[in-house]
Structure formats: C-alpha cells, structure tokens
Image 1 (cartoon, rainbow, N blue to C red):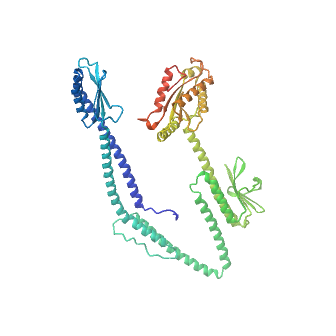
Image 2: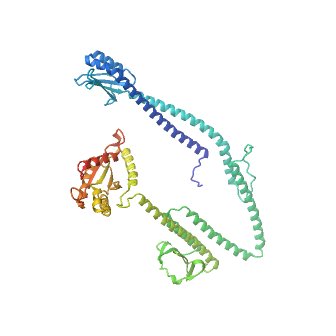
Image 3: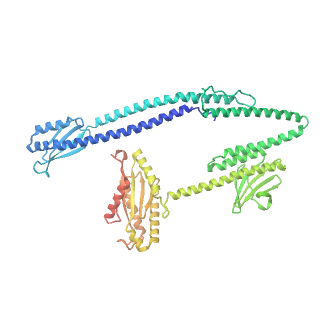
Amino acid sequence: MSSGQRFVSIRQNILRRVFWSALVCSSLGVLIQTLSIYSSENERFHQLTVWIGETQVPLLTLGLWDIELEPLQQQLQQLADRPEIERVVLETPFQLRLSAGRPASKQYSDAQLPIPHPYNPQQVLGTLHIYTYSTSLYERVFQSAIWSILEIALITLLIGAAIAYPMHHQLGRPLRRIAQYATKLAPDKPQPPLKLCRSEKDYYDEIDLVAHGFETLRQSLQQYAHERDQALAALAYERDQLDRRVALRTAALQRINGYLDLFSRTLMQCVHLPVDQYQSKLYWALQELSEYIDASVCALAEEKDQHWQWLVVYPEATPMPQYVPEQFEPVPDGWEYSSSLDVWVYCLRNQDGGSLLWLQGVRLASSVDERRYQQMAAKMLFSLLERWQHARALEVSHKELERLSFSDALTGLANRRRFNEQYRQELQRAYRHNTALSVLMIDIDYFKAYNDHYGHGQGDQCLVQIGQCLLNSFQRAGELPARLGGEEFVVLLPYCDAAKAQRAAERLRWTVEALAIEHLGAPLGQVTVSVGFASLQRPQEASHHMNLLEIADKALYMAKAAGRNTVCG
C-alpha cells in the first residue's frame, strides 16, 4: 500500500457494482421492452392490413369500377383518420391518383394492397399504398424506456440504502478501528487488547477472525519484546566478559542477515516476472550483490552444447574472458569453484548444461563462511537463471502453438479461425468509421479433376503455389488471405471499395493464369481460378448489416456459372 494510492472503501465498491449491475439490467430491460413493442406494432399493422384487404379493398374495387371519386376520397380519408396510418395513396394504371392523410415522412410505403377487377380477379385496377405513423411507435418506446429506468433507479436506491447502512456499521466501522489499532502495534509499545464495541451475538464472523488474529499478533509481539529484552540482558552480561566474541558473532549475524535480505529482495522482485524483464532484474541482482560484497565485476553465464555464453555482466560492457573448464576443481553435488588472484568463479553443472557466477575483486573471499554465502548467492541466481530459461522456452512454445492454431498447415495462409476473427474486427471497424470493406472468394476451377488426374500429392503442391500467389499479391497492411478448406480461399480487403476489389480480383486471376500450371482436365489446359467479390461501401448508410461472405460466395457461384476463370461481384 503506497502513499500515492487513494482510499476507496468496500462499501463504495459494492454500491458502485450494484449501480453498474442495475444500469446493465435497465439497459437490457429497455432493449427487451423496445423489441416487444416493435414486434407488437408490426403485428398490429399486419392485422390492420389484413382487415383493410378483407373489408375496404372490395369497396375500393366497386368505387374504381364505377369511377366514383368522391366516395373513394371519403373512404381513403376514413382510413387515413386511423391513428396507426399516416397516409394512404390510391394509384391506378390510367393515371388516377388519390391520397389522404398527413404528408408521408418516408419515401416508400409500408404495405401495398392490389385492387382487383370485380369480374376478373386476375386483372388489377389499382394499388393502395399504406404509410404507417412511426411517431406513435417512438413515443411508446420512449415512454416505456423512461418508466423502466425510473423503476430500476428506485429499486437500485432502495437496495443501495439497504446495503450501505449495515455495511457501514458491521464492516466499515470495525475495519477502521482495526486499522487504527494496527498502526499502534509495535514491540516497544505494549497495547491493550483490541475492543471493537460490537453487539453480543451467538456466532462469529470474518471481523471476529481478523480481531482474533490481531490479538494473537499483539501477544506474539509482547512475547517477542519480552524475549528480546531477555536476550539483550544476557548479551549485556556476556559483553563484559566476551566482548570480542560477541562483536565477531554480531558481525557474522549481520553478514548472514545481509545476504538473506539480499536474497529475499531479489526473489520478491522476480515473482511473476515477465520474460522480457528477467535480464534487467538479473542485472539489478548482480548490482546489489556487487555492492554488498564489494566486487568490481559480477557476471552470469550459461552452458549450452558445451559452449559458454555470458548472459548478464555488471558493469555493462566489461570485457569477459572465455570460460576454461580445466581451471575448476570438482566439489560434491555438482558444484565447481576456482580462484585466481582476485577472481572467484562458482559453477553448477547438470545433464542439461551448467551455470556460472564470476566474482572479481571480492574482499573476504578467502573466508570459508564467505565462500559458503557466495555459493548460496550463486545458487539463488542460478535458480533465477533456470526460471528464465524455462520461461523463454514456454514463451517460444506458446507462440508456436498460437501460430499453428491460426495458420493453415499446408499453405501457410491464415486458417478459417484466424480469418473469422479478423473479419469480425474489420467489419466492426468499418461500421464504426464508415469505411469501405471488401471480401474476395476464390475457388480453383476443376480442382477435383486435377486431383483425379495428377494425384493428391500434386494437388497439394498446386494449393501451395496458389497460396504463395495470394501471399505475394496481398501484402498491404490489413489485407488477409486465408484458406477456408479444400480449394476454397478468401481475401479480406479493408478500406477497399467495389472498384478496387474488382481490380484486385482481376489482377489475382491474371496472376494465377500467368503461373501456367498444367491442368489437362480443364478447358484451357492450365489451372485457373474463379473469383467472387462483395463490398460494403458506406456501412453507416446501410439499412441493415450485410453478410459479405454470403454475397461473395453467391458471386463466386455466378462466376462459375459464367464459365469459370472469371470475376463476378
């Protein structure tokens, strides 16, 4: 808990989550109610259309047949007076046009009912266009949304009030009391037992567990202070007679504690460490070790395939010699060490290789205890080095698995999974920024005949060549060629309108044809492709979401039907 962090109570967090949950529920409720109202309005308009067709159309038929304009106008006005209808228009093939109601707010009518001939139902005298009144629908949706939001807001306030009060009295106040009490705990300042002033109950909860833990801590601190006072008294008594021995022992303990503190800080810094930060943390650990043991140079190396490589050197850019295995003397447990003038080297070997710690200019290196401490430091650094190696290997394996999961094993192109994910992202980006998006659907012509004639091995080679052609043809940022399966390929073209997509498709068809891959089972005697393309020009102006893949697939079938080796879109 750093000084720069701000305090946020548990009560605020819980109330904030209740608020956001209520907001999500309100949004879902409004959406569901809006869809329900919209569906009911559509059903209501459908029933109205059926009613008009059953009751009003026969009257309009008679009026048109007799050419009685005034009754026709009255009947249209009666229909337009209904609250669901904004405007009605009656059009006939013989240039008769009657209308009633408010001016239409939309270009196209919502329903068209034919007016049949009274004696020949196959003949149509005219068409009745009906425009719905959308404002009433919007008002109902808006009123429903306002009421839903008010209801959920009221419920949220009631729930928040019901939660806030007990949270403050049962959790917030006791925790603050515990926090204030914890700041006063110290070995040199005895404190009375913790009292939370809570009401009596026949059970205990988490607050009681925390209070019991602090009571145990207080007793431990008092016990520690008592034992420390006894130890200080004993040391003071012994100091008068064994002053030199105590001084030496104290120095040794300080030295051990210094090493242990160094190990602890180093290990804590390296917990859950990303792979790219291991080298910097090892450099920091060498710097700490160098400053503690007063070494001029500290370095780490590892052995792979009988070759040594210096991984981390402190200070940086220090020239390091080649490692000479013959200079080491074997010691138990796989450890080796050597000394030459002011250089001490510790090495640990195993069946996978070895790790090496180079210490130069170390004072007190000749001490047995000091060499043991340095060997402990080497073991700690070697364990970090081993973790780094494992983390690197794991990262390499993870990247390889990720690559395999998103690529086609035969052609090296993206597979269907990678394409679908990229397609969804680009489609969302196109609708968000109102940019063009195109898709090319490619199929190798007469590929089954190619496999039957040349064999599946040669067929795979043909697929590899086509895949490489796609990779070479579409290398711009965002362009993604992929293999969907078999002889079907697809290309995603962001920021590409229909004209550019058609040119890209034609260029691809020419490029494949220029490969001149022999195919005696095809009319042209060589491998060709058919391409279908689909484009989304201005997504924000579209009335509904377009499925580019289905449109491109239909265009591909049109290209095949047109004789193959062609482009359609």
